[in-house]
Image (cartoon, rainbow, N blue to C red; front, side):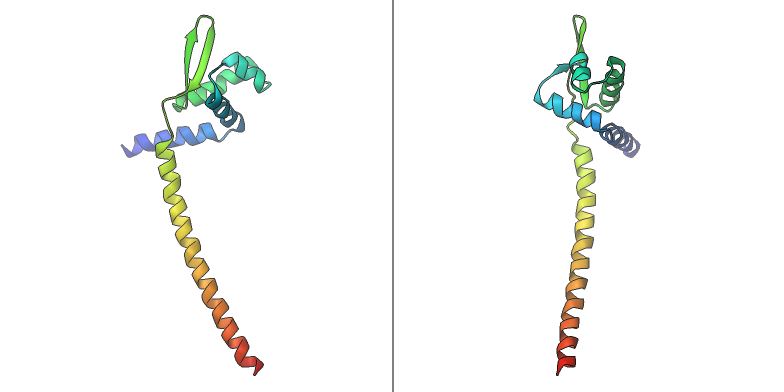
Length: 121
C-alpha cells in the first residue's frame, strides 16, 4: 500500500515538475484538446507533445481516446487528493515550526526591550 502510494506520488510530482505538462493540464482544464492542437498551442513537435501526454497519462492525470484519426486528450481520473494530503501534512509541519520561531523571536524582542529600558535609566 505504502509503495503503491509512493509510486503514484513519484509519478504525479514527476509529471507536474515540467512547465509544459502543467500548462497542458491547465489547457485541458478549460477544454478537451487533440494532441495536434496541444502541440500547436505549445509550439512543439507532435512527437514531443506525445511524450508529454504519455507522462501525464502514466500518472493518471490525462486520459486519451482515439476518435477517428485524432487522439483526444482530457483530464484524467486522478484528482490529486493523495498529493494534496501529502503537501498539506508538510504545510502543517512547517507552519508549526514557523509559529514556534515567531514565539522565540517575540520573546527575544521583549527581553531586548526590557534590557534596553534598564540601560537607558
